[in-house]
Image (tube, rainbow, N blue to C red):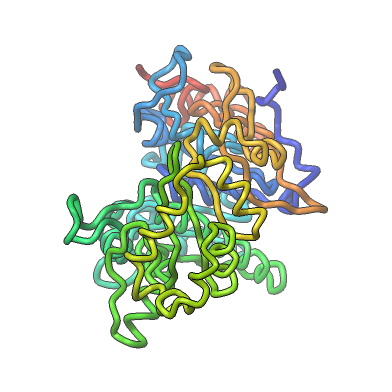
Length: 423
């Protein structure tokens, strides 16, 4: 097992000269800092001495027994490539330590309610006075301004308020119809990615001008920005794209179709692709049928088209149809389970599952970074840490504190014990 307690290798990666002070928890903020860590940044994750990051206790499922309090599999998905220190920012000594680290940092990321950290001397104005080059990123439910700024916000709430649930689900005319959330924290993910992008842009500006800035990212803004075609449809034509189940509102056939051993997705987004689909399914007469010849007509006759396509798919299974239709240059794929993805040859060849050695539970598996950089690739250097696992190392390496001072901070309850949480 590699020694992951050693100071990280900062020799490679496009952000290997960047230090990030990370005061985020749950999903959106930690995803942003994980992206920076994958790109080589030294990410110092600050956790509460009692309990650590909130998402450590969000389960089931849990990681295998490891001799510490419950560790969710959720936490492992957004916290690699980080060093953890358990530190009480409510204390004057803790605030001073964070000020000292901020002086040495390039980026500060937080996702508290607006105004919370300013009460502890850790707001943007306070830290930028200490370090004018600091890029300070705030991730919140509704942003730093506006009438909703003081509200707490979570992914589910943002999905509803930003309109995603208005286009997700079965129409109310169908059994079980009504709004439905996307089954993953999609708005958290968008916000985390937007935070990473905003931080990179701010670093570019800082490197050119020497000036840091405040990056303001919200779940609500990120959710609304993701609503590309529904937003454009309403604000430009006042046409509402409502609940369309598994159908595409503007293309057909485009959706889930049953086959003999399960389901496949067929996605035809142009007349050219429909011509290829019709030929592959053995129905070239569809090409000249006025109900199907053009995309607008196919959308208008969606139900009839779906029925005849489903009938043409009878007699073969997923693998056979996926092979046949892709050979005909028709966009088609299976509905995969996690078990299917684990065995998928494309996943293996692309290295889409990253494996790292955790100090107590052994191998940790997570989705790999989707970033592929030919000259400065991402790296996986540190497994998702135990709470406070690297506290002594950070205090020594970053602040130059000696063992006596570190021991004093522990006695005073400012810094928590490395790698241990109360059960």
